Amino acid sequence: MSTPRVRAIRGATTVEHDTREQVIARTKELVNAVVERNGLAPDDLISILFTATDDIRSAFPAEAAREAGFTHVPLMCARELDIVDGIERCIRVMVHVETTGDPSALRHPYLHGARQLRTDLPE
Image (cartoon, rainbow, N blue to C red; front, side, top):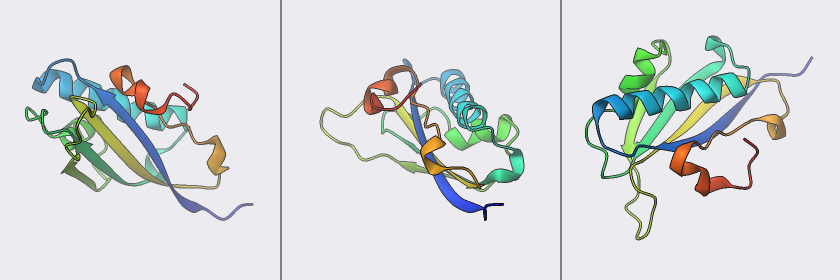
């Protein structure tokens, strides 16, 4: 039996409009994709770090994770770097998990307009 290791799973999504409803819905979709694609149980999650671009101001992405039931996981939000020609209205996530699985088997979801950030990764 393998010893559990801490791993990080990345992902991102975008919103078309900075509305509370869309930020909450897309963030829930993103966090749920991380969990589902990687077959994670609630106790596997250690912490979740969100970043959002400067043009997202309507809601905290962490609020969506709480609404999705991640009430036992420490959450933090931060600002994404404001890079020239960077992707607009983008929410990124880094989920720290404990797993015994092969790190190359982890699935990092890049959804909607954020898919362009990592076209090298499988869906």
